[in-house]
Length: 343
Ligand code: SAH
Image 1: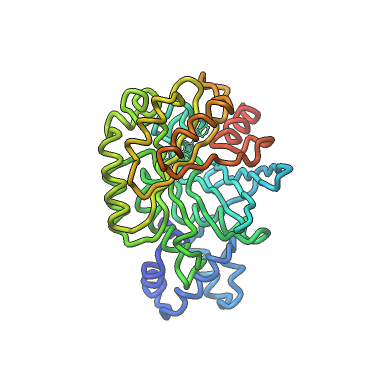
Image 2: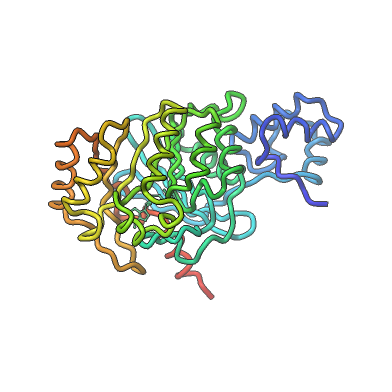
């Protein structure tokens, strides 16, 4: 019989599962609290009897991550490479800000979206992460560095793993679980329009980050294959619906690629598209990826682009680069690890 992964269930389903074993429902709440504290086995759940722990070991599992590597940057950023139970690896990054520690988690092993500048998608998607595996990346780090914010911006397209993502967010934010504020969570997407609409209806106060990277279909088609399915106009309309449903300002991510999406014309069109919307544009100097042929924009071009946006009243910031010295961006650590450990 296949074991049930208790760490990937909501509190309600977890409670039903323990009741089905003939246990009282409060056991569900006890196990749920332990999972939020990042235990890696039932044996650590010290308020359960030995008999019960034995029974759980025989019938159930819980997701764990094991540290395969960790690099530290001089700015305090830490990048973890975690091994999952089936031997796959994911990357997770801890960043330190004045407002607290923020963890960037992965949502899939690999990615199917095929963005042309991205290292995570080079070999496609291997599998989705479970809700428990997403939470475990946070609870592992939380044992040494208290985590107050989470961004789902690591490897993978979170909205391509929709149900597990939403269960994970509910468990992360449940006052009976980890108890993180919904407002401290950002989910980043390349723009899966029907899933943005579903997310808008979940009644969550999380921030939606949209990887826009170009204001026109010609440029965006070149960079992101998903744009052929959901072009810029449809994506921006879905973002307007998300804002109307949740009241949450949309954050638009824009990586700066030299000579490709960073001209004054791109800036002016972007400003026209976003004018009057409750929006924030985050300019990100592209990280060079060996396997890809794009180059990062020069600082001058980034400054020019940024001023053209602010002149038009667009709220714009330029992302500070953390963890530069440790391959801290998407997919790079996993790719390097796999190169070094192949055979
Ligand atoms: N699939 C989701 C989340 C993961 S990617 C998404 O597309 O938003 C997280 C962010 O990193 C995205 O904005 C993505 O476009 C960006 N990114 C990918 N490769 C990059 C690179 N080489 N340099 C800078 N940012 C990159």
